[in-house]
Length: 189
Image 1 (spheres, rainbow, N blue to C red):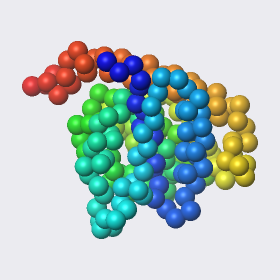
Image 2 (image 1 turned 45 degrees about the vertical axis):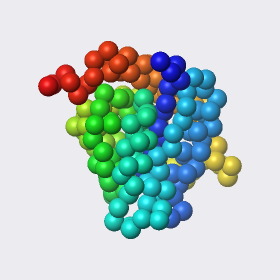
Image 3 (image 1 turned 135 degrees about the horizontal axis):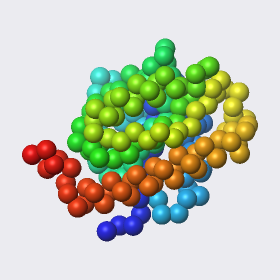
């Protein structure tokens, strides 16, 4: 068994000039400092490259989601919900999400993206994934990062991310062992 855990970081936005890149870059800097993990990026903007605007590369989505042991969804809140591109990406595959933990990093205005996260928790529960309780949220996000992409209150942001990541890794190890012992799809058969 490969001891390295694969964590997929999923971008939630495809808007031109998206702030998602700033948040993801901070997350990646923190993740790369962790040992024992491999990071896979799932960006709906890249999954549309060269394709009709109405379609994403479903085979590539299935491959990246399938190889992950856990997920970190980085999402903004648009109009009190999560972005349509994220919904399209999530709905592109079904079984690869099963019995895997999902953590959320959200950002936005006053709510910090928490309304989007609450909706996503329901969606992932419907996909037989395991949304974890701990997360990171940035309200008034444009005031939360400096010009270099570092959180203004880096200590608090890193502390929240550390707790979230520890819990995500715990669930990822537990669920990977459970999937290896008994295929999730066969439980209901």
